[in-house]
Image 1 (tube, rainbow, N blue to C red):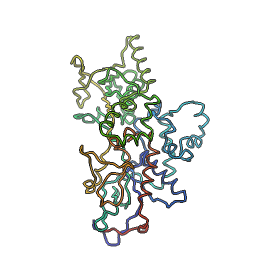
Image 2: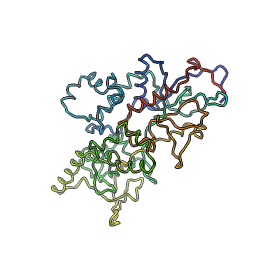
Image 3: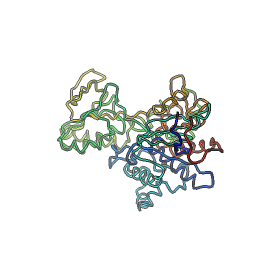
Image 4: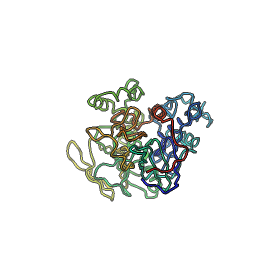
Length: 435
C-alpha cells in the first residue's frame, strides 16, 4: 500500500478484532503479563458494539450457566488472578452468599455482570463502537511485516499480530428470512416489550436445544393467554451429557489429543460427544417443561404443545407455519404472532476482513483453514506476523473452539506464542507506513 507522506500509524504487538469474552480474556492475560518482569506486549482491541455485551438477547434472569464458574476468564490459567469470578464476588459483597448457595453454576445475568466488571478493568485497551472494515498488508521488501487494521471511524492501527475474535453469528435455516414475525432467539429479550403490547395468541419455537427450551419456557410464563408450540425433529428434548468422564472433552489436554488425531478420529469424537453441548438441555429444565405439559393435560387446557418428530416446511412473513410430521407426513398450519428459530450459531468467517491476505492463508483438502496448535492460521512464509483465531477452529482443536470452557488456557497459549515469536529488534512506538 502507498501512504501519505509523514503519516503516522500507532504500532502494536497485538491488535484484537472484536472484544467478546475470548479477547477480553486475552486483554486480561496481557495485563497480567505486562505487570511482570518480562518485556511488555502492547495491544489494542476494536469492538463494534457500543459497550461490552455477550448474548444480551438471551440474558433471561432465571437462566443459569452451563459451565462451572471456575472456568471463568482466568482461573484455569492463573488461579491467583484478581480478575477471577471469585474476586468479582468479593468485590460485589456476595462471596459468602455464593458459597452458601452451594452451586457451581451462576445465573447467566450474574456471569455477564462479571464479564462487564472485568472489561471495565481493562477498558483502556479497547475502542468500543469501532468496527474493523479491512485489514491490509504492509510490506517490507518481499515480506509482509505488519497488518494495517482499518476501522469504521477512519482510524487505522498497525499490528505485528492479529487476534480475530469476532464470535458467532445467528444461524437461520436455508430459505428462512428474518422479519417482524420471524426471528432468531438471540433477539428474544429485545422483542418482548413490543410483544407485550400485542396480546399474542400463539408462538412457534423451532429447535431442540437449551436455547429453544428456555425460549419456550419464558414465552409460556410471560404470555399466559398464548399458546407456545415447540417444533423439533427429535422425539423429545435430550439432556446434556455432563457426566464427569464425558466432560473431559473440555479439558485442555483434550485439545492436544484432538489436534493430533486424524480426521476419522476427529469426526468420531465430535459425534460421540456432541451431546455435551449441541441440541442438549439441562435436565431440570426438561423436567419443568414436562411438568407443565402434564399439568395442562390434567387441567384440559393445552398451552404448551410439543410437535416432536416434526419440521416446519413453510413459514410466511405473516407468521403462518406449516408443520409436517416426519413419521406420518401429516401437516398442521399454525398462525403465529412470532416464529422464533433457536437454531444455533455459525462462526464468523475470519478471512472476510483480510482482503488480499486471505489468499495467503493455507487451507486443507476440504477448504477449511489450516490452523497451527497455537491457534495461528498457517500462512505463506512471507507473512512475518501471526493471525490468530479465537473461534472457528472446531475442525482442528475440537468442541471447545467457541466455548468458555478452555478460554483462559487458550489465551495463555496465544500470548505465549506471540511472545516467543516476537522479533527483538523492532521499530519505535510509531512507524511511518511502508510500501
